[in-house]
Amino acid sequence: MAELLCLNTFTDTRGNLTVIEKVVPFSIKRIFYIYGVDSSVRGGHRHKTTLQAAICLQGSCRIYCNTGDKEDYYYLDSPSKCLVIDAQDWHYMDQFTSDAILMVLASTLYDDKDYIFAPY
Image (cartoon, rainbow, N blue to C red; front, top):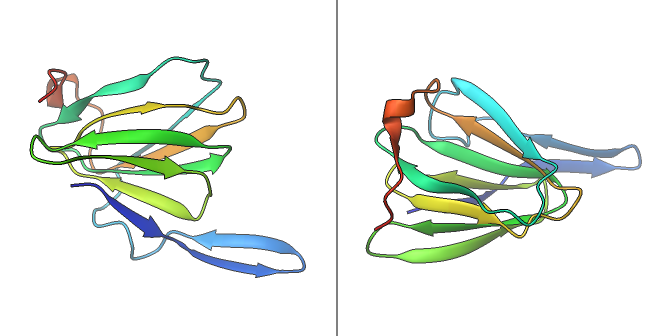
């Protein structure tokens, strides 16, 4: 099941510095980001092998995850929140604010054969 992590963030008068180090449980092979989303729902799949870590760098969005046994909603509304999404988590993203930028770190390179679109 997905796990919400708090990333180390250091704040002082100059601003904030958030670190992604030794918290993501996989080696990062691909990074992509989603932005400029209207009222559409993104995702709607799970993976055979790919693990992902989602961070909303700006704005906010909601991520729904379902393992077939358990389901939950996660709200990413701070760049210090990181949602690790397991391969078996059928998920979608919605409720993007107009300024949202969702960055996703992935454990594999893109492979269209790794996607399973049928929900549980």
